[in-house]
Length: 355
Ligand code: FCA
Image (cartoon, rainbow, N blue to C red; front, side):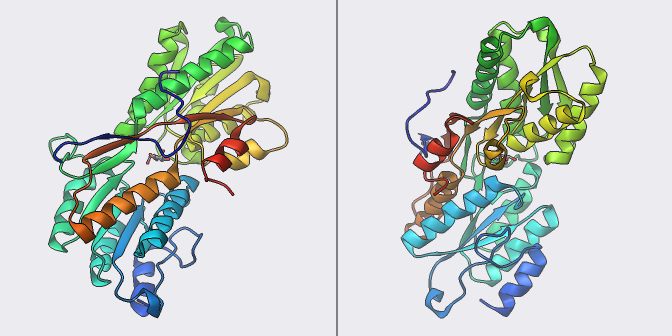
């Protein structure tokens, strides 16, 4: 494997360079969310006991994805530990992001962590946040400026995308070898979303690693997904499978578990038996139900990264920044652990991701 499979999560490699109820209800309507602690878009604690506490927002692009629900859980843990309030909002588009920032300010919040629905919203988010005197930390998807470069002035925490992608490539190749698949009957389906840097780096990493291991370049096929959900990747993979009826066995990679799940569903739809499909995802949070299925599917495993760990750490960094003026590290990267049906319950429990 290209990355060390370190024993505990969260693993943070830091690169320091010098480094209330009606109003809330209105906010939730505006942000397209609902109230309740474990549901997407759940709102903050607005009880009397919470008055006077620091309030921080945690905004995520896809609140329906378990990854982001686990990030929220981590942020709530930090809130409980440090005694601040976390306001969780789903922001699936730019309009919802801007409305959420205004409403956070109206609620008296001092800052927010965000996984933006579009990295090119970065400059607008920063301008709006400054105007409202809110501090911002980007999580998962790094802001991109008008010049196409990352906005290094905005503290960021995210995956070591290339390394994690490479680990997927290595693990796919190793499993293919273990099953003794003839290479000439095998294809590598890579569901891509190149618009997003962290996504492109992950799939590029998987391709580079499998090629370096000796898998032929002409048997690697990319399938661009239009939307980063199961239907988006199902459609992308389905087209690819139709174009390559000669392929008898498929290796599958994508930017995350959701991407691989969609492609695995596509192979099922086209009659591939689970033993002729090896899909390896990234996140480790969005494949729990899949790996718990009694009968194995083509979804073989995932690179687990700690979503609760990322949620906890970003919320904690923001809290210290607001409360003590301690600026967060500008760039923090997390690594992964390979999980399969054999070990996932044990590892997820050990990492405190499931009880
Ligand atoms: C992106 C993906 C998420 C998760 C996160 C770390 O935002 O869309 O599924 O992988 O990076």
